[in-house]
Length: 442
Image 1 (cartoon, rainbow, N blue to C red):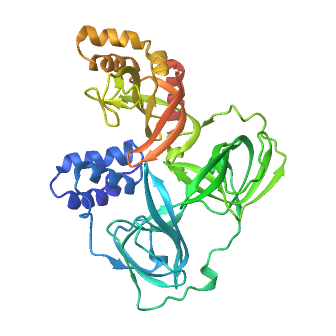
Image 2 (image 1 turned 135 degrees about the vertical axis):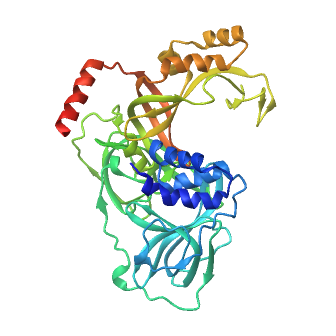
Image 3 (image 1 turned 90 degrees about the vertical axis):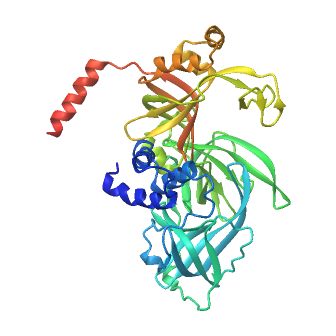
């Protein structure tokens, strides 16, 4: 949990960037909401607040004159720095970010003091050559998997350096693979060894840079969790068998880590003692999920603290199922909508908060309000919002368990709920437990 002293630098930086577009009290409330209530990291909170209040902030986010730093001096929180580095490893590829394809460049940079992973998020017109020295200008850093990472966004610039950089051989990363449980896997982790049981398999044909390729994908699990995997070679994986995967790496889709088996990967068949894991849903705290970035098939136990706009009786396009306003679909134009029922909850478990989208079936189960009853209520009061107000009275401050996949973006973690239930709370027992904990802490 942050305090005001920790939030002040972020507040002051945003105040300069937004330049009067938000008053000080509101800005501090927003900072506390994103960092303390939602539990998201400072960088993502910063981007979300700027996006919310400075809609034309495409090039004005420059917080200070940049300074040149060596890699060993980077802290993972710099917003505007220059580094002169040698490209040790370069990988240019196309990725899909929130439905938009773009070219990024990632790899390893080095100087006389050490090495560091990097990502250039606008790599379309950039060509880095392995072994050459470059001047990265207006870069920013963040911590990822306990390592500093250099990032270059839209305000960054790369120039070929006049000087050269010698990277000591001892600083170039080794290829030693480390064992890790599936429940501990985070985005960006590389060169890992994972033992898990194959839960499902599928084969997909995809197009990579104009070339047709086959991807062998599915779900793999151990006694700590589940994860999606993708293999670029046919290892003849079968449902139910347990494998040990060496030299795998991790990428994420919308915050959900995915295990990748590349050309360097080694796969062997082993035995396990996991027991029955196919139907097991891992219990996670929201804090744990935020640290990982997302999660597949997890259960969260918490309290509903808010019902967001967009809940209750809504209209959808009958062709694409998008939620719509004014009977007009962004893809299909003017349509005859169909009604649906849903809840968009904010759930807090004491370690953090997440958004949760609950479908019609579970909304009806948790509130007792059916879709037909909701339509009748809205018709009787000539007000669709009357349904969400009725639901809010029933659901806010209830303790619930929700299960599903958790994705992350600039607004924090969000679960698409597959199953939800109200948890009965024994108030007397809980009060005694809290009293004992407080007494023990004195």
